[in-house]
Length: 327
Image 1 (cartoon, rainbow, N blue to C red):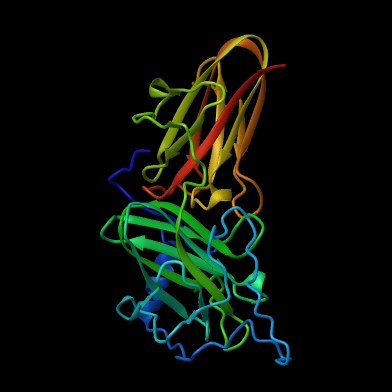
Image 2 (cartoon, rainbow, N blue to C red):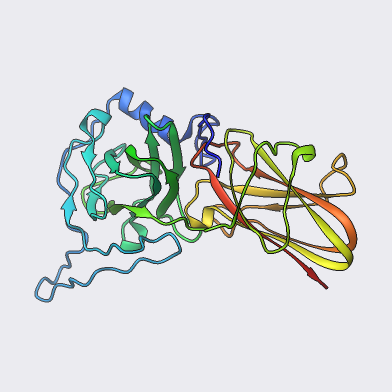
């Protein structure tokens, strides 16, 4: 997988102006001076009836859940941690209890990744009964990396998993609607070394930004790639043999923790005409794009992958599986 030099990020929701992004909004809050009350959060696992406390670790759900770490929380957020200079260290594989203690509160943490690999940061609130709707902005200044997530496919909680060189990472956690109080906006946070969620057997080969440089892929290949910079387009092509065949491009990205929200544009008989079909990603509301087409055979099909928010960078990864089967 090619790690480009140019890294950027874009807004993840329509409520944020184009080009600003959640991290930009958080920066504006910092510049304005957040008047957040420095308090220690209540323990969200504490029941009203304390005679029989439940100490069993709450389960994680979904493909992006931490693979080996289990709650309950072992450390508690310490305020103030709004500004980068006050960032609280978050050790790997350690559950943290935090809260948005007041409106416009934001919480900043630093994470040390000792080796190159994959980094997962997991924010859970809704699944724990909290009102908090969290957004993760994960950056590494020394590595030129930025990524954002504001939800998962079926939850307002946010889990982000990215390819990550060794180094220091800053996680800024904000409440999407800038709400907060001392009892109802609690959350749990954990950072962990992760595995490649897709595990491909082929890699995108740059340059492939035009139809002329499209990568040729074969049925059964699991291809991993990057939207390496804003407005990047990745082109691929497949040779369909004679006879009726069903061609499928099954994308995995957002559903596995990537910040990438892809669409698939497919073409036949040349790429100068309008796309044959389009399969859109439904980040936060459904699955990654799945494109299926019945070909009469003996033709070349092209498809390009495009990021829905015109974002990109070395954290904006994706994978897809191509299948061509006689039908």
